[in-house]
Amino acid sequence: MVSETSSAHVAAAVPLQDCALFLDFDGTLASLQDDPDTVALPTGGADLLLALKVKLSGALVLISGRDIRDLSVRTPTSVLRAGGHGLEICLPGEAPRDDGGSIAPKLKASVETIVASHVGVRIEDKGPVLAVHFRQNPGAEADLLRDLHALAADLPDYKAQHGKMVIELKPSRANKGIALASLMQSPPFTERTPIMVGDDTTDEDAMRTATDLGGFGIKVGAGETCAKYRLRDPDAVWDWLRRLVDEHT
Figure 1 (cartoon, rainbow, N blue to C red):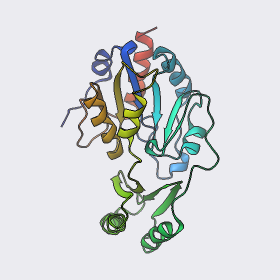
Figure 2 (cartoon, one colour; figure 1 turned 30 degrees about the vertical axis):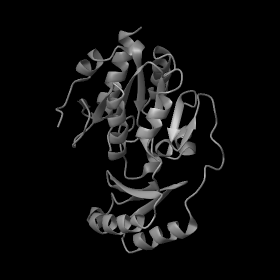
Figure 3 (tube, rainbow, N blue to C red; figure 1 turned 90 degrees about the vertical axis):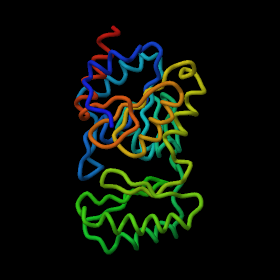
Figure 4 (tube, one colour; figure 1 turned 180 degrees about the horizontal axis):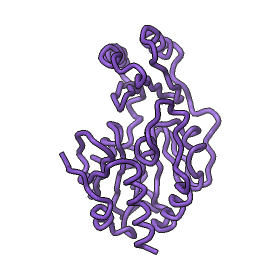
């Protein structure tokens, strides 16, 4: 397991002009909240992201498990956004489509039945992805994991993935690593070194891909990781990003 690394150490490892930067949203750029609808960038965060985009010549991606429409409300639309773990991508300045697809009603009903017996557990509908949040009832974790994995096992195109106080039922192609690899094949990302910054299980997919492509991952917070570096929390991430912009001004 990598140890906690200072933002100065990570910044020193980044030749910014040669890099492509992929940033998770929840738990990375914004602190986790009991209610995911209240999560937002810190004051000044949008302006810093836009400055970072300029320094990277556009090679900046906000990549999130959130639905692309939700992500686009919370982040600058002049930055490339990849929502639904990469299922939908909006180029800078591009508005998301009104209808990004939805999960099959029968499957959603099955998830609702599983969740109904657990007080404090809520479903977040993210188009083709369903997130089951149990932060307000941690004791439900084992039962939810068992039942949702059993449900996904009968669905060849879906998988259940465990994250921080959440279990997501999502299409198998909804994978941040797949999205990162695809984006790296097109300008302005080609010939650059990918860096993935994230805090949760789904981010590990992209960190592994970044490493395979000659880059590296930065893990935010505690927990096992394949990342080369670690930052303590979202505040440390913003300190690092400010340092990147300042040192390349």
